[in-house]
Length: 343
Ligand code: PHE
Image 1 (spheres, rainbow, N blue to C red):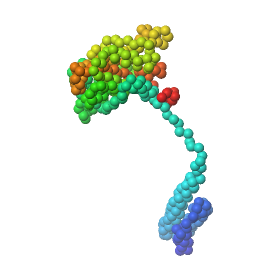
Image 2 (image 1 turned 60 degrees about the vertical axis):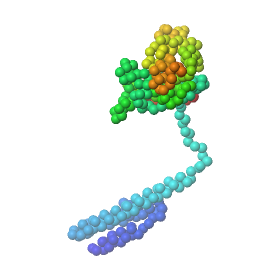
Image 3 (image 1 turned 45 degrees about the horizontal axis):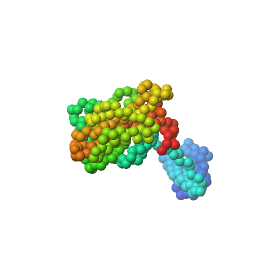
Image 4 (image 1 turned 45 degrees about the vertical axis):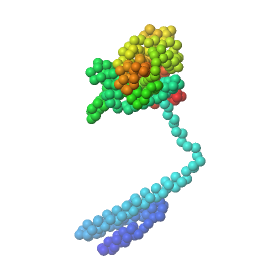
């Protein structure tokens, strides 16, 4: 009976001595030892001839045979497969044309922002930016909206819990404050950027949007300069022929106004858009309040200036005749692709 043990030990030694050199040899190895008609299967069948008291030992020996053969087989299989893949890789035709890379397009809000920026830079404004997480001073207090001022209700925002006094800016006006603190007039800047408000006026409203604000300060800047600058903008941006300035209120400007552009009522669309008046509101503006100049270290007796601010999403809706503002946030590529040609 020790014959069969000897035979099995021999096969085990054979398995461990083998080293198939390629996939074909490995397959031969598999068939020889692990196949359904292989050596190991044959040896297993001998089990019934092994006396009972030695069956356990024989079983353990069989397990070792099987394990050794399988481990060797699986490890080599991985090696040969990796080699085959590398070989395929080196057969790559490097002169073949590349995979096409789909080009993205600018977001309509970015396109609109660039267009606004471009118009104002043509008039000598330069772009300024600042942090989106602002301090209370730059966002509110410097802008003539101290802590208990009712106008704060118009611009509720999100506060940073771990940093008292820090908040998400509600407009890009704090950029103006930062520029004025650091420079003396003449100042001619526009501040495009993302702003935040904590408001749920309607299901369409969104906690963030984009603005462009402008600031012009020098000696002798008047309301006439404001009006002419904004008229030029309305002409360039919308092809508008007329603007209208309606009295309004902002804490940081005095006097303040809302600017409307003339669309007329001759088409049904314009009639609807302007609620039958022909006028469409575009932006807020005014002469910088002398208190704001003083807050930021500018001599209000020597200098004066104007400021304006507008929401970009609204202008984008206008420009591209987009019916629902939510399309601008959902970022469905089927929508965005339509702007591929816009710059
Ligand atoms: N900061 C104002 C707002 O966000 C816009 C504005 C800017 C109005 C400058 C007047 C002058 O509503």
